Image (cartoon, rainbow, N blue to C red; front, side):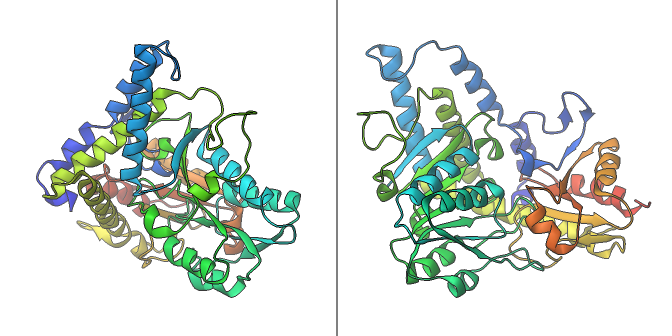
Length: 417
């Protein structure tokens, strides 16, 4: 694992901006990664470089040709990062906007009287889009209930409600409330076993920073990520779509190329910063493996990240050094259970007799950044069935350390009303 390689964590942390200090607050531990991961220093430099370039792609000049080459290189890098040998990548306003656009296109092209299926565990980005466009397109919406105790929805749960007339399906890859990852490939197989031509669209926004993506193995038609949650920056989202989703009639300019999905001139720097992210994964893979092939190094980095983050969440739950873990603190409740192998770099808790917002504020006073999730339009689908008004989300990434986990546990251990 990463922490077993001398000084590797220090090298990793050196590649990220503001890794141990907030530019406004000063020194702090950053456990708010699910709200937006830290940004690679290379991404910051690339963003500044491209912000200064006046030229746009699609013109007949040297600079424009160079920008097109950079975009094409980034798309090739993304195909490695997400293991997608077909289909296409494109940039939009945000991951949420791209989910809406993919789901909308699939719904309005579906047969009237068909169905859309999705799960109650999903972020409102996909649930809202699916329910809205199902109604507009004359489709019935089928909700697959998730298991409150584990924070999961399974292939068996989908299969129980599948019928041959399901035309569109949505899947959440990982929950930003509980941190639990779903088995996308298994769920997609269950869907296609009953409705083989169904268009399947995945929200991969929370998952992208915490493990591997393997689109070729999923048998899906759309997958969206938000780059600011995977070490790039705000201001854009990235979608992958299959060839058959690409070919559906969709919003575009009159007489534009039939396979075009982007609106207007996109920021070349957005594409270029994703190449920075994949270059980082390539570097990390070389540190944790002897793989000679770039694709294999990127995959090795994903495995190492997942394993190390599991180590950190286990330390948080079970304790480290002489500090008790969250499971041993009588005043702490862990959402989705202490022993849940689906967890991806996130532990959500409540503290007895203390409102979650007060806990987050008290942690922040100690220089530990976390976040309150409320039973609102973002998280009520998960928290309300548990009888909770709110919870404290502690979300980490592979640049966090066991020492930072210990700092958190030391504060929570003595936190009383």
